[in-house]
Image 1: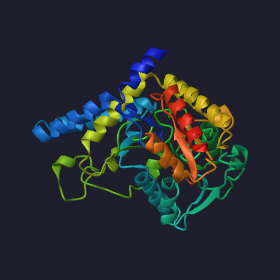
Image 2: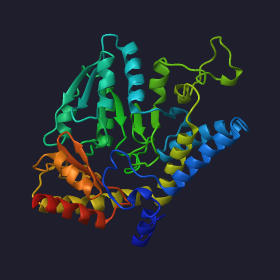
Image 3: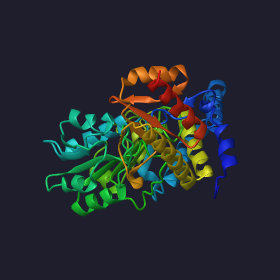
Image 4: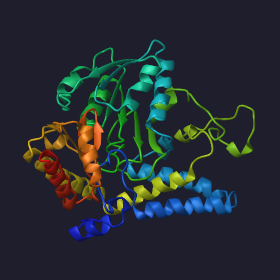
Length: 383
């Protein structure tokens, strides 16, 4: 769609069952699924249950079709550089193991302290050294962050959008600085895929991981994993399964020829229902229009942000529009669990993240959702 009218947003909302009879503002945890995605998932479950291994070719066709859709969505010139795996924790453990082979004493890594644990814990576990850069009230000073990249830094890890504060960093700038300094850049795009367009032909990242059950609305169980070709060629795959070889259906128990594409990390039998859901969710996203989605989410977020400011509740995170996202995090100035219990009695759903309230608004939300949420906040304050 070149332009989505208000009527079309209303119609789109009806395609998301998660909007029924509730105000759902937990999209940064798990977002709703379009009816097409739900239908496609059911079709694949039914096919597997009723047909089993009849027409096995359909499984291979889906694997490659899902991969190609991801590559198209992220504008990846070489489709062999991307695959779909379990989750970001899995993907970053793979990267941590590969780095340990290159840096036996541990790589020196720079990352924001606000990162989701998936971005940090795998690297600690495998013996790497991490400098955690602190934000100020959820704002990452990009100049200061870049200045922390030294001659000793091997890797920069950061999220496009921070999970707890919604701060959106300038990934193009970070990528340029890393490339200029010869530093690997691992990007966690979990909180941005499905909201902000990413062009991997232009954006020079070493690796990207993005879990698909949040803003993309693909259901739980798959994550995008991208590696640039240079990094792939320089590092041995740390894991191997029966589907990691060039001819898996020969089913030989002798060392085979490993695959040269990133599908080497799809180790064994795959959750095909989830692959189908990711493919369908990406197609829905493209059909609506990525720029339209970004604009809609930011418009709704700005309305919500303004209303929370009117209540005098301190917002944590970006004040500048270029660093904002669909996540609004604020200090409730009360016990957050008490507030969440009060809200859930009214079927309004938000998160407690590190003692703050996180409301994450999607394109299928609307101003009525915002009004009901703000009204409930006022009622709680004056109860």
